[in-house]
Image (tube, rainbow, N blue to C red; front, side):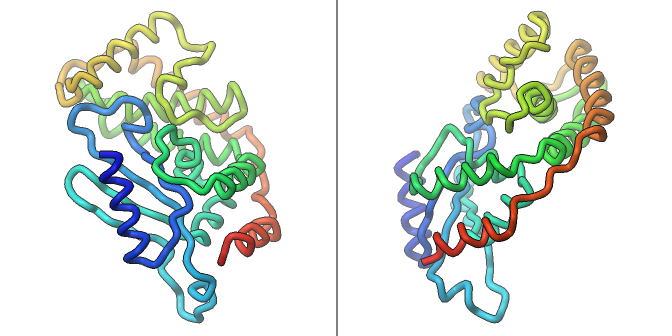
Length: 252
């Protein structure tokens, strides 16, 4: 599959006349718990020739290629990438930390990561993960019977909030790294580990009674972070001059 993905990226680059600077896996495969039928979600960053950015009319800043039922590929142009970096966009930050890399310009990625570290906004990130967790919790877990895979839709963003609070860093992409936190009890970790084994085994569509211990933990954390995030100071975004300098350097 890796060779199929690399070939698809080469064809996209040729078809669109772009240079792909970075391409990674996102979603459950990057998180470390794909099931046997999980698809591949490939995300990439690219640049065009300089003249493209000098047009008066607005130009498209993203590309989408649903290749087939198993493979979905999407990309962001350099200008969109930097605009989202200034806002400490969580999706972009996760791409930059993905453990599965298909293609990269090492210098570009290293410089982009340095910019992202300077611009990390804890409040913005926690709001993002908190809203994700709250929405998924209301939709999927506030029921007597639930699909077990839906727990990960809430656990992962909640654990991300906890990581940011504990370490003042952007959370790791791999789910099991998120479990390396001091405030998680042995009993809770055991429940999560058992759920993780079942998810990887393919039991994710099973519908069964909600797990009281997990629901109690999630309730407590959601209530805590709803108040905690209000106390954080909003960090000003990275200076436009620095982003412009980076953009001009990397535009051909």
